[in-house]
Amino acid sequence: VDGKSAVSASSTVSRAAGRLVATASAGPDKGRIPGKFLAGVALTEPFAGNVAVADNQTGAPISLTSAPGIGSLTASCVDQSNAPGVEDPQTVLTLDNATSNVINTAKRLGGAGAQVVAHAPGTVQTLTVNGSTNFEFHVQNRDEQIIISGIVRQDGRGTGNAQCLFYGTTLRIS
Image (tube, rainbow, N blue to C red; front, side, top):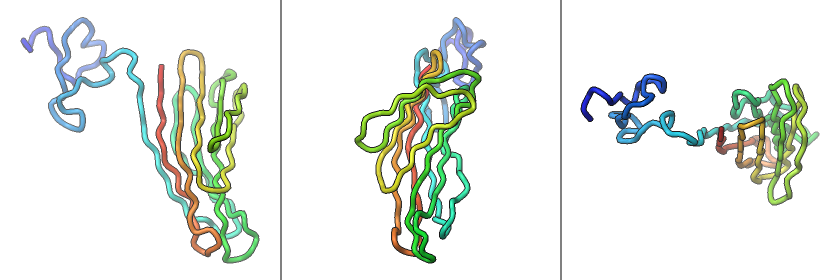
């Protein structure tokens, strides 16, 4: 622009206040105005994980996504089968409330209706997935909403080499 009243796309929001903002000159957002300068832009973040089933055990939880000011979503891969060498994957999704207040949470598995709960501070909400399907958590904390939607796929059922696969997107609206 004129170089005097405009700031670069890498400027801070406070420096850009009251000025024109140039588009990004490089990277994946080349030619675009960064979202931090646009009011009401939702933030998205993808997640994915793939965990082998531990025969006759519950695997350690892995972090899928976190939402500052709300909590985090983890997934554990569990072997439902008691037979040695025959694995039957199950995924347990756990959303924790890391806030100091009650948050509103709706959780849904597959095509079922949502279960809406008042999610107390320091507690968790879980979804247990015994097959391959989609899931969703919709969380509200004051003026912030998080929608976590994803897919769980369980491969290798009845074999000695089963695994849990999960992927999805976190959408944050402030």
